[in-house]
Amino acid sequence: MIKIERLTKNYGSNCAVDDISFEIQKGETVGFLGPNGAGKSTTMNILTGYLSASAGRVAIDGIDVLADPIGAKKLIGYLPEQPPVYLDMTVDEYLKFNYELKGCTLEREPHLAEICEVVKISHVRKRLIRNLSKGYRQRVGVAQALIGNPPVIIFDEPTVGLDPKQIIEIRSLIRSLGKDHTVLLSTHILQEVQAVCDRIIIINKGKIVADEKTENITRVVEGNRRFNVKICGPQREVLDTIKSLPGVSYAELLAQKDGDACTYMVESEFGVDVRKKLFYTVAEHDWAMIGLESLGMSLEDIFITVVNKTEEDKSDAESGKRNKSSAPKRTRRTRNTLENDLADTLVKDAEQKRAEAAEVSDEDM
Amino acid sequence: MLAIYKKELRSYFTNPLGFVFVGIFLAVSALLFSYTTFLSKTYDTSSYFLLMIFVLVLLLPLLTMRLFAEEKKLRTEQLLLTAPISLTGMVLGKFFAAFTMFFGCMLVSCINLIPLYAIAAAERGNLSYSTTYVGPVTAQIVGSMIAIILIGAAFIALGTLVSTLTENQLAAAIITMAAIFGLIFTSLISSFVPVVWIRTALNWISVLGRFSNLSSGVFDIAAVVYYLSLTFVFLFLTVRVYEKRRWN
Image (cartoon, rainbow over all chains, first blue to last red; front, side):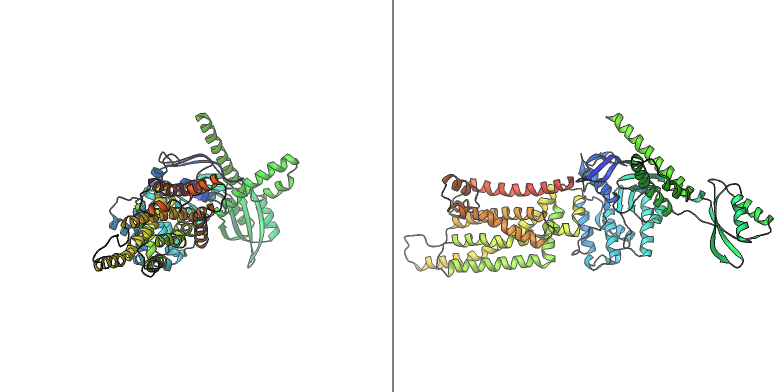
């Protein structure tokens, strides 16, 4: 439905989006993730025809945005970062203006009433937008994007400035939209992506650093075997015993005491479940295990590692050119091995996809 | 285009600007009209129309200053630029909204002419015999009206262009005034230029220079084409400004 090929955007000498390619299938809900200034909004602005690309091709449902901008724009409902509302209009007037602006052919009153119902602004339709709170303005912006029932919906940070209840409402709205629309939303809130998206694209400094199905990432996150275990017993011996277990890659004593028990943080090798073995070993020594709590790796961890990873790789490559030793970085990296493994796979995947896309378009030429 | 036209026209009357414009325009035109005709005891309207051009310099920027500057400031231009309409449609919608305001005021200000014609009719009734025509010359008035409306269109187009260049409405208004003054002053300056060909060139491009034929009741097609192309050029540049902004 959305196809981006080798998209590049330069602002003067500053490269905001650097040769990115991806494709979004019909009916997919895709989260576009990245730190501030990563190029999310720029990409979205190019998709919606607000900006033009310096190089590359963007097509919505096969229609090139540059060749037939009006045709492409008809397919898109767009909510920019700041809801583009006219403060001196009432909600009703604003929606009617948008209805006309988009040349919508659906029957007006029922269509607008339905949209207002969906985003829950029916009770403020007669009020001036100037007098609405940020959350309501945001919803009016969402309503505007839904007018005409466009097949592609693009939201730029839709939940910024909303209260927690509204955030949940907007998320469930996006989820329900995702059933019969193609949705692309950008955000830097990770739970949001996890909650509503089928697929996650992480972008940093204008490059795609990861592009994975949410379930894959979640599976990896859950496959993580790091947990806190509370054991009553002599600290040093317990720690040594845990460390000597096969499959344990890392163990550490945490300074949390609970009666005569201590908490240990244990990390197992990838794909190995050591919990059972740990339990029996501890039991053999006649120590009591009074707690076992698995520490899920959060999306934040992945995100930060993936983003750092690409930056580190870059600086590694650069410093590698200058002098061969990059030893201090290696030692730092032995910690959090899991995140690094994961980040490695994600980054490599993205690189591979990039290379494939490059090959394909090279063949085209 | 129609949606934008309606929205702009509406917004002139949802904030005070439209009322201020209509009020000042009608008041000033009535005042000028009575000073230049009734109080000067003449049926000659030419000085009224000439003064009106200078009034337009001050008033028309009020109409055009917010057209694009406000959209830019509120970030609503993103809505218009991502909507399925052409840039030309967007610019024309806004231009015609401002033009409609001006055109409407101009038509309403024709009420001023009624007492003048009434007085002329009364005077003719009093004279038992008349050798010369007494009263305003309708051809001159119609010609001046056409000229003023075309000049106004050109000024509005210029104001529209300036409005795209800044976020600040006040700056847009002041720059527009300066630019329009520049257009008008070329003809005033030209009379001080001793070199003939420069003077000819300046007269050729000057807005006021072309006004005289129309205002004397001669339908000067060259002048009409000149004013229309001036309008076209400014609107074209406005579209180009937006086109260029997408690319940088």
